[in-house]
Every structure is written in structure tokens, then in C-alpha cells.
Length: 227
Image 1 (tube, rainbow, N blue to C red):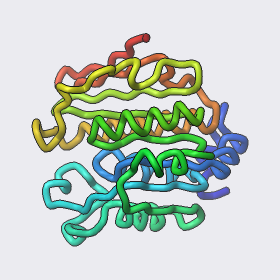
Image 2: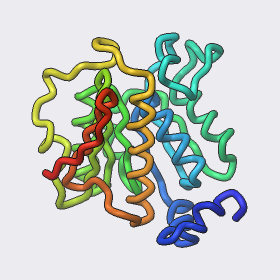
Image 3: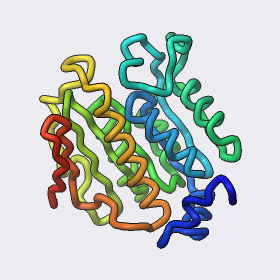
């Protein structure tokens, strides 16, 4: 009760919301800039089970924006390292690390039974595969993306516009490795992804269903586009 008292005090959230969080299972795809932020917020908030999936290792260039990692973590597996950080933040929840690449064969098993999936990767093919698997299973998801100074977030549940409906072709996708990224941009997007996931889990507020949030850190501006 002491740990989550600030949630319990929230009108419209309270014990009901915290109980729903405690019984929830979240899958975080990608332990990079977005995933590190989203996972720590989900864990600290009390999400009962969190599974973090990533096959990559930590590179020195990640430290500019992936704040969960330190110089001593360079070369270590991202999924396992991030999972250890989330466990250190909250020992009362279950945190699982999956250090492997998602495929068409293992995706259905990974998303099955989840309360929500957070797509935090930096790979268009992964985003399409994960969101398609979620839609087939009827599992809600939140997708975040960043490019240089900009970011975007959307959410989905059955009956709403999906990721491929909004982005039928990402041939012009610009990754952080190709175009760079402002250090703080992933922090903003990852925080919003976690917020959307908490709203979905607890049925609080209005998630970004059939809407796309566009973020421009240079302007700065936050624009919500109806779909």
C-alpha cells in the first residue's frame, strides 16, 4: 500500500486500477531507447508480469539515450540487463528476459494471453510482424517510433485501425543508426507508451485508439491526428 499510495489516491484509478495492474501481463518488444523507459515505468507502477524481448547487446552508442544502461553494461545482452534493472526497481513483480529474435513461429506464443503489448523496436519488419500477431490474437498494443527530432505513438484494440492501416509502407523509414536521434526524444515517446499501456490495463482515460500522436521536439508540438 505504501509503494502504490500515489496511484491509490488518484481519482478514477485507486485500488481498482492498482489491482488490475498487479494482475496484468505486458510484453515489451525491444530493449532499446523506448523499451528501457517503458519497462521501468511499467515495473515501478506495479505491472504484475513483464516480459522483455531483445536479441541485441548493448553498444557504447546506445548510452546517449538508453538511460537504463551504463558503461559497465556495454557488451551485455539488452533483455537480461534491462530485466535486472526493472527487478531492482520493484522486487514484488515478475520480470522475464527473452534473449532471442522474434519470428513468425514464436510470435503467436509470445503475445498469447498478454494484457497489452508494447512495440518498442527500431525495425519496421518487427513492428509489422508484432502488430499482426497481436491483431490475430486480439491483444491490444501500443506502438512507438522515433526519427531524429520527432516521435509518434498509437494504440490498438479489436475494431480499431491497425499499424499497417496507418503505415502501409515504411520503405522510407529512417533508423537512429541512419539518421541519428535527439537523446531526449525516446524518453518522451517511451513515457507516453507506458502511459497508454497503463490506461489500457486499468481502463482509465481514452487510449490512442484510432488516433496517432505526433511529437516534434523542435517546435515543440504535440498533435493528435484522428484516423
